[in-house]
Image (cartoon, rainbow, N blue to C red):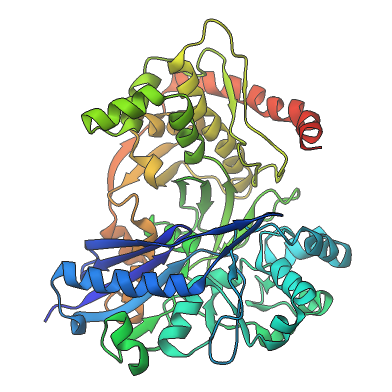
Length: 506
């Protein structure tokens, strides 16, 4: 009887369930969405009960649509949104909504942590700068503002950890999610006692840390019917979505790198050691292979900038796409080809939602610079693609300080655009590799972890056979030179507007 791997990817907008066979082939997928709650003062939360309902609903639909028996599922594994804060009691029952990664309420707590330890100290220990986006500042906020909830908290969990707890009764996380909490010592692979003491939180409230491919337990009989699987099905913890995407992209060997282009975007590589930047512009996760690290830099508005452009400027392409049942982005890409590299010296700064890497400036905003009567729609569209890619080029240069790479894989929705891949190849001056699986790479990483845990796959290198390279885009010398000359102007443009950003924010 055939055996299958079931992987869940608990994202920000919903949970995607995916089914893979023993050879790593994607057979089917199913999405179940849930709500995000926004309130004043940068507070962003989700109800963990919605996560559980989405996992149960998508599991049942996926098994039914795939026409398999539930006892054919050999293992269930997870990917999930990172940097969250969900307090649960001893029974695993949530004590409040989860404070998710996008929440910024704990700025004051991050400032306190900076005063107590300093940015350099925390960065050198954890591989991350001090920020309200990370779990530690959020835990400190709960302790200060909701003391009874903090007192009653047995463990603080992430999204995937909560689902694993529901399935098995175990309170655990994996190395990748632990490394994104501002609390984990990268070198010792353990919770930092120094940070714990200074932050005045309790070590006992943090989950135990396990490798991503570890079988944590089995689906208990009390929830088996609810999720629609057999009791006793092995449960693998999996990893944070960034780490899963890294494996799904096939970035296993030291020095291999990839670029994810979705609403946000990041560049990351596999490394035997963290890459620490003197200005704290990039950060480091622990790889799904716990002997490796993932130096990384993430920008806020990549595909989101292109979506904004479509919804507000390229309305003709959007309406025509609906009418002709053609992807509106494909129509926009055709316009890009009418322009030329540097879009006739038009610059787009892609800071529509502030910025993380490389500037870490929440006050930064988007801008078109150099706009003149000679520019047309094709130039504007091209400048947005180029602006995002120039910003990623800054991140790429930082990551390459210790080790350079000549090739870079691309995944995510933006990687479907051949036009954008050409721009990336020329701006990065690197060969861009497009694997077969672009948008499902994150769930593939979770599936590989599950397959290893269940003994189906021998190791993470298996993914390179599953997600083979289907296309290579090489840089064109003349365009590379033109972008190289223009790149410093792009960087100066941000610096020139920093004072303006502050004045606008005030």
